[in-house]
Image (tube, rainbow, N blue to C red):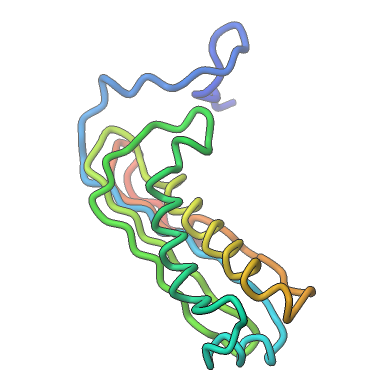
Length: 156
């Protein structure tokens, strides 16, 4: 059985010591989506939401969230982020969100990418909820990571 790295020998939660790890270039990509009615998607595309530019606001929210991940996730390391991008693609029945985070460090950027997607999705939900109370945040997941000792991960 794999030992959980955030659990100490006596079962207490702990922050993992990464000081002995080598710094490498690391990248993580996460995805998610907000499912909605086509009419809601049309309002977003046309820029007609009462609260303003939904996609632009969600993009900025996702980037800001990636930068503050260690403040939200208790045992997460603070990372010097080299780049964060949040791409939003309108689909027939929703918005696909892709976040890419790059860092040069001793630990990966998976949590930052996942946080960026999650907060971008929540921002879309918040800004469009008056038009569509049936929206769903779906399929938030890590799709790729590179760098570090464990190498590359690509979601099958």
